[in-house]
Image 1 (spheres, rainbow, N blue to C red):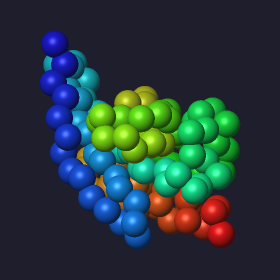
Image 2: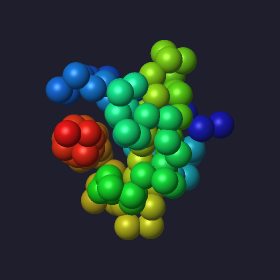
Image 3: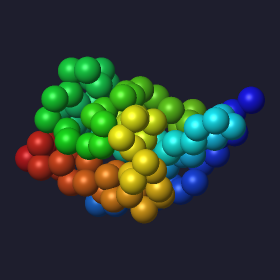
Image 4: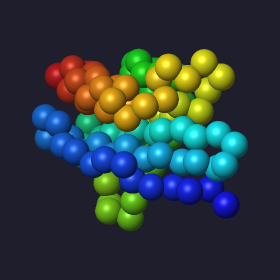
Length: 107
């Protein structure tokens, strides 16, 4: 059974972000999730329809997560070329970068 845990939660420029880590015994990876505010153009949009956000491996998630009523977009490091990026610091920096992009796109 895979081990899943929330590694870090933070807030940057008014947007919440959450970083998780999963280890299934064979592979391990991080995921980064960033809040999309209700007044944002990408609120409740499917990640396949969001083409303006640049992040590691591209967006791979959109939806309500963690049962807190917040809508998130997210990405993961479970890609063939993710090994150098598979760490908490890298994922946090990507989350902060996504928040900066969301702010810029909504202005």
